[in-house]
Image (cartoon, rainbow, N blue to C red; front, top):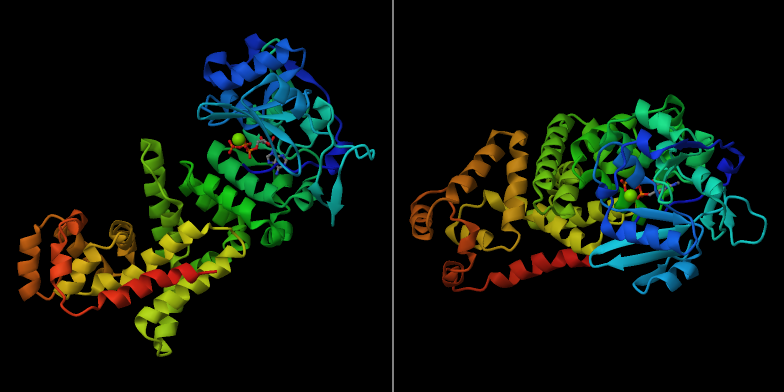
Amino acid sequence: MTEAVPNAASAAVSVSLRIIPREQHTISRKNISAGALRVLYRLNEAGFSAFLVGGAVRDLLLGGRPKDFDVATNATPEDVKRLFRNCRLIGRRFRLAHVVFGNEIVEVATFRGSSDDGSGDRHVVDGRIVRDNVYGTIEEDAVRRDFTVNALYYDIADFSVRDYVGGYEDLQRRELRLIGDPVQRYREDPVRMLRAVRLAAKLDFRIADDARAPFDELGELLLQAPPARLFDESLKMFMAGSGLKSFRALDASGLLADVYPLTARALAIRSGGTFRAMIEQGMANTDARVVEGKPVTPAFLFAILLWGPVRAQVEKEIARGTDMNLAWIRIGHLVMNEQSKHVAIPRRFAIVIQEIWSLQPRFEQTQKKRVFRLLAHPRFRAAYDFLLLRAGEGTEIAAIGERWTRAQGASHDELAAQLNTAAVPVAVAPVAADESGAVATAPKKRPRRRRKRTAATPTSAE
Ligand code: ATP
Ligand code: MG
């Protein structure tokens, strides 16, 4: 999804081809998806050259299982379209072909050039390439890629791996090295800094010294990076099974402040340790779910990442005399809006995030009516999971969490009886929402109205 940005600076990079023959590397066709193989073979049979390229080759060589397979070829997108019925042409900046097999999409890109001889369609603004449609040779295609280990080509014609920039050796040394001059490559596309951190964390690679050195000086260029790309990269960092490692690496790199400035600031204050522990626990839980193949929602993770700033600001707002409910909603909007300048968090997630936050103070309520109402809330489960993650904030929060946990075991009648006498909730499972006659029968008045309004208000975010 992340759009690769070609590179003018690397045009100066000298290339020398090394061919690693089939018997000297570990890529086996049985680990390549059926769709990708079909695309490669058909292109090849039609007389075009066809290579598997990028992350897939890298991950296959490392013994991993790539999620998606990218193909590079000298066939134009129109050629590809003619060869495959199941083909869509996409992309504004650079035309790509998507060949669709059931739920697999194989991305086929024509070799991208790096020389601007006026024959193509290239636009450079302040050193950044904003549009590019120049086709080129495989050598040019290799040098416009970001890291050497991302520029390896698996040739379907003889099953060899072709290396133009020393990527094979770097892969064996487990090092991320930029192709060309790091400063220039980062200036062209600052997101490459984030990719360095993410890939190093995911692959357990080190970032070459000269690739890390510019972070301090150039990191702030990320403040201006397209929010949609930063959202894509965020998902890849935090939702792909190595979230904890990515978060730690991002924090240690100093780049966290350029993508999640509010988070970085909240980590730096006195209560930052508790906040950091909460983020790390949330990341670890998410990683475990990803590994087990369970569903995960980005909303929950973003709610965690921004919790520190929200909590601190809500406290101030309430101290200033703002009504509690209003303070939660107002600060929720504020923080989301601020973060959205950097990372384009889609609205459907923003709504859930703000709900998770604004439900937090409601866990402190002990009135029977309110307890049942909270249990019936469609976001109860997410908000409750979030509450448990907050246990480190203090014994009081931890105790509240435990009360709601114990409660999940109790029957509806037990809970109702306890709430009539006790001052603390010992709630039933949220499943009871269905039989929530309890929720409906309790109040004769209509406070529900007000609740609807508060629940709906976050939609006006942004
Ligand atoms: P992942 O396994 O996380 O998908 P990836 O390396 O495959 O990692 P993609 O975003 O899928 O990352 O990109 C595919 C390939 O496109 C990369 O391997 C690299 O060759 C090239 N590429 C991607 N982004 C850039 C960029 N910003 N600048 C230059 N080349 C890029
Ligand atoms: Mg990829």
